[in-house]
Image (tube, rainbow, N blue to C red; front, side, top):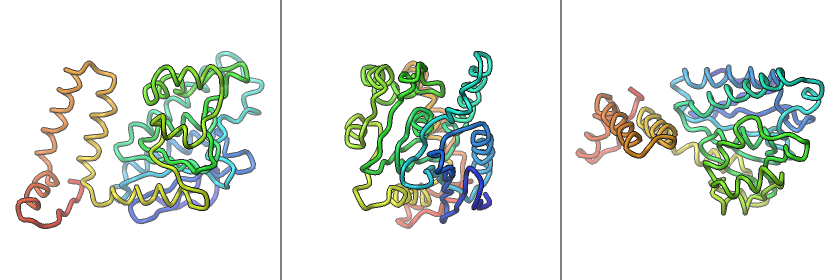
Length: 264
């Protein structure tokens, strides 16, 4: 991936981590068509770049990770256009979820509506202590359109998901952690991006093919009957024995040395 210092999404590389920053602070990093198209392009770049082991998403400024969809852009659209807008968001967030590399959301401010849904499509979520997250679309006479009614109950359970979606209330970081929605909180004065990067660095030393296979088994198996999910796990497990990383990991363990994983 190549660094980008301007535009609606910037890219910074730190060792094996690509940091993507939503860069529309005056619009509280709201999502529009251009942002989605660029995000889809960058997801493709991250997937094909073997040097990138982890992706971190965050927002510019201190107010917002992402305040959701650009409401002004939605004001005059009709039924068909709204459906296509929803399907575009679904396709991009599915590509993000399917990325065979760990994706971490560093939620530095509010994550509302589409911003919450963007975070839900990530594998790990960390929040600043002052941040809030939720699906307030109901207060606009609308509902989540980019996976909020589907990913949220899969993560926090149906009861809490209905509470959040049907009331539109927001969760503070401490409640989000208790609900299992996030993995950690950056305390006041600490950087949530730094916290996410500490987590991201762990993946640099891990075998990327095994990480991708384990992620695939968890994500795809969640929607399968247990017997089918176990078959999927066995398939992924078996394939790793045909990789050089699998051979290297076993050899290094037996030889009592550090493994050298190459992603092959």
